[in-house]
Image 1 (tube, helix red, strand yellow):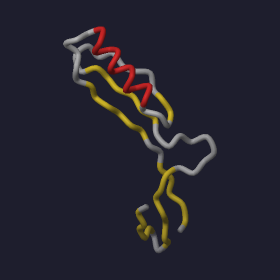
Image 2 (spheres, rainbow, N blue to C red):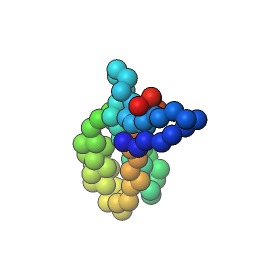
Image 3 (cartoon, rainbow, N blue to C red):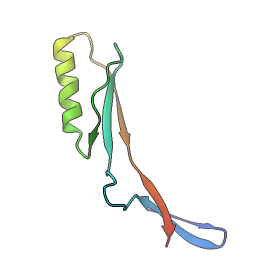
Image 4 (cartoon, rainbow, N blue to C red):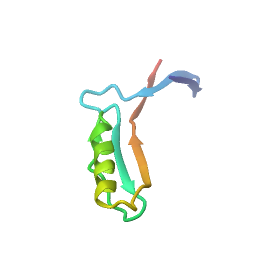
Length: 77
């Protein structure tokens, strides 16, 4: 968690605490053909399985761009 003083007030930056907010959204894109794995909330295993299966079907496709989104919130300390 990072703290900073903004306009003479102390604030905290952290993970979005809201109900239903995912901890992370994971996805991947094949660097050879651009095909993208379906996004997965809070679990990277389905994305990893997609990449392994994609390479199994396309043996020359072995590089992927992994993407993870997280959500932050700023609130008074």
